[in-house]
Image (cartoon, rainbow, N blue to C red; front, side, top):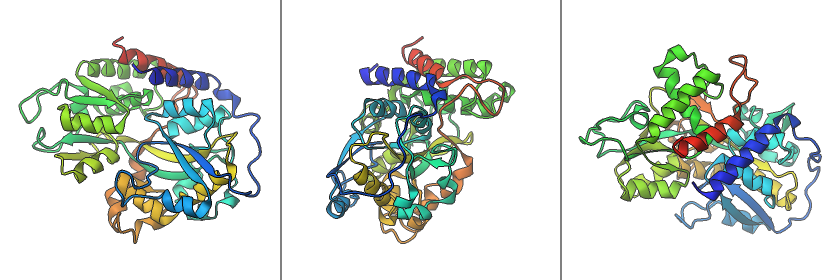
Length: 388
């Protein structure tokens, strides 16, 4: 296991234990913009901040730099725990945080309330996202919605004559359509939040467990999810968190099925690889990402300029086409040459209510009395990865 994975895990435990602190001593939001400071430092998911280096058609950084006076510097992170660790270290301005990191960052005082009056495009944000629970606390907004989507089941069409309709192909050993076992040919996500994927599968296949929410598990439900993950470990080729490493594994290492992001699917399909994806019958976990500003952002004016820029229709549409995600501003769904007028529907804009969006598990939960808190998810998933 990498040093970063362990360090991120420890950070996750520390922040989870301070959940009740609720972000004390955070400065008041900025009231007016000053002179651009010259830079904005962003922690982002792979593929989220593009300047045309991978594909010249996808560049939403160059024009921002020309118009704002702010140079963009990006640090990519493969998991939410890695993002939390980086924000804890400091030195960054904003982060594209998913729901399993955003509330931890708020509770830990690592991000600041934003002044939506300084973001004119806020009014164009999807109403379903404007007051979403993963970035809004006590009526205060701690970020601007960026993109959202589902974690898909990516598969090699040479190994599957028909599209798999269940997550079973990555959780249980079986013979695939090509006559070979899936053992050593499947992957799982390298992050504690993946326990929710196991719980989601059990919701459908073992209803007697009574799981109502994959992020709210009592001790028995949690044990069942861990047992499934320990079973899965016997057939896993790799626990992935680097999108490009996963692409290489599907291309060169014989991997044929895994949870993934539409980003990897799009890139490989663009290279004419035998790759497709589905949302299985059990449903899917997903992510609704928010651009959040560090409590001590070194470049606050450039940070606000970036948050405003991030909501413009061309960026939102181009990013959705690139990543396979859904824009946070619905007006980006029409008139974008790269996305096409049917792109948002293809990427799942109508599936919002069907996705179990990532969020940090807490001991106090809504579906039942007491649930297993996130720090347990962190330590126990590290143990699963280590074969324990």
